[in-house]
Each structure stands twice: as C-alpha cells, then as structure tokens.
Image (spheres, helix red, strand yellow):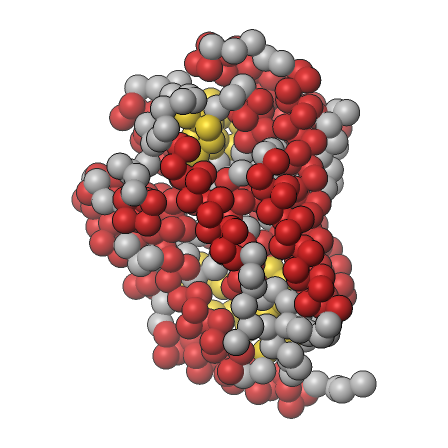
Length: 405
Ligand code: SF4
C-alpha cells in the first residue's frame, strides 16, 4: 500500500488552522479561494475560505442533506453546489467543521472579500453572508476570458486591490504595512513554487502523487498561503515525493496509461475514482484543478502588480485559446495519453467540454478525450455505473491504441 507519510503532518496543520479561526485572537476575513488572501493576511486577519468548506461538505457527502435547505430559500439546485451546500449547511447549523474539528461552525466574518476571476457565483454567495451578518464586503472584478493579460488590465485590478486598503484598515484596526505585505507575498510565492514542484514530481515514470491525493494535499496552499506553516509543509512533502520518484516508488509503479483530469473533482467519489483508475492501470498524474494554486508570478519586490497579474492570469479566467495552450504544454510535460473532462453540472465555469474544446484539442495534440458528467458536490448529477463503463472503455481503447517505445 502506497502511503504519503507527510499526510499526518498535513492533518495536524489543517486542524490547527481551523481551530485558530475561532480562537477570537484575530479578526476573521472570508475570502474566495483565488482571491487576494495575501493582502488580507498582511492586515493580521485569520482568513477563512467558504469554498474549502464546500469541498469538505462534498467530500463528506453532507452536501446532499444541505443543498435542499438552500433550494427552499430560492437558490436553484442547478447553481454552484458549493454555494447551495454551504448556505444550506449554514441554515441547518450543521457542518463537518463541528464533527471533524470541534468547531461551532463557520467562523463569524468581520470582513468578506471576493474575486470574480473564477465566476460570478461567488458574488451572490458571499453577499448572502454579508447581508446576514451585516458586515463589510469588498469585490474584485477583473477582466475575464482574455488571450493575453495586458499591463492596462493588471493596472485596473491593482486599483481594485488598493481600494480594499481603507476597508481593511478600518475593520482590522491596523494601518497598511507595505513591508508586511511584501513579506506575506514572499512566503506565499515560496509556498506556491514548492507546490508547483510537488505537482511536477508526477512527471516521473512511477508518479508519486496522483490527482486524487493532490486534491487532499492542496489544503494548505489554499487556506494557509502567505504563512511559514504552508511553506514548511510543502518543503516536507516535496522532500518525500522527490525521494520516492528517485527510488521509482509511486502510487502506481508501472502505469499503462497516464491521464490528465480536467475540471472539478467529484468530491464525494474521490476514493471510488482513484480505485477505478488504478484498477485499470491508469495513473491520473495532472489536472487543471490542482495547478490552479500555482502563482509563479508572485514577486515580493512588486507585490501589487505581481499579485494582481497572478490572480487575473489563472486558467479558469482565460480564453479558450489560452487554455488550449496551457493544456498542450501540460500534456507534453506529464507525458499524457488521454484526458478526462469532468463536465460538472453546477459549475460551468470550470467545465471546458461544452463548446467543442475536447475535439479541437484532440485535433491539435492527438490526445484522446473522454467527457464524463457529474458534479463537484451534488451526486444526483453523477451516474456511477455509467461513468465506470465509460472510463473503463476509454482506458481499454487508450491501451489498445498506445504505441509503446
Ligand atoms: S468556480 Fe464553480 S465551483 Fe467554484 S465557486 Fe464558482 S461556480 Fe462554484
């Protein structure tokens, strides 16, 4: 049984992170997962990420009981199931944070910040809480779907980031400290570069980190970036995975095929999916999802510009042309034999199989594609039997057509 030893350390730091949110020692800011967390952290806020809670609701399958509560309040069952699961959990006063971390529930926000670089849904979602708690809310609305992000567009985002400063000063009670901001960006950059190296260990012939394990180990880069704790964790994880790769130790020692996962995870079926691919000799070695927290443009010497650019250039916020270029590069780097697109019913923002991209990308790269239908949290949209049949057939065809060199 392949095991990543650093997992124990990750559980400790995630537990400590959640407990710190309700210690009462610091003000709490809520933030979108690819939002300006570094700026918030520089003011001394504890930063809480509702999407992380959405993933927890999906992974524990508690989402299925919570979504109907939000639907009763007027939220469609066809909008983002992070949103509906999270709002439903709040209305039901029922969260895995209680059972897993001994918390009372999500921490009360002093400030809410969102960035529509990923979708507009976060704006509606976060406004629900700003209205409920009567707390200040700030939004970043960057240009979307660009082939290239120009300096003019980055300058617009910088101005929006800078408009947050007076609100953060007022709520936190601290003056903006440029040195502290630079320091947080430096820590965030160092952690994110380590995370990038962690992901790249799976370019090895015996890959040491699967996409499914990556969705678990990405916890600290989502919720703790900008801290020494996150940086130290990824140094530890990288050391272990590099050693495994050097020694030919991987989660699947001799994969017959190497797969790219595109789109959201199906949180309630991670184990099932992981076992299914492994049983068919397929290693899922890379994904757009786990790569979304690599911000390699961060630069502490130019913290405003570099964070604005990094958060605007993320995969989900780009044009099809830019996405296809990124995917083509990843296919080469990870020696990909096939790509599986998860067409997530309630997140069209992170589903790239609806406008012909799989066909166009196959023509360009020759990499075969499979589309499966499902959802990030709402398992009513996922047919397990049908998906297993589609995936097994796809993997058989990949093997049959593979040219071994
Ligand atoms: S990107 Fe998708 S899953 Fe994430 S918050 Fe937006 S709609 Fe929900």
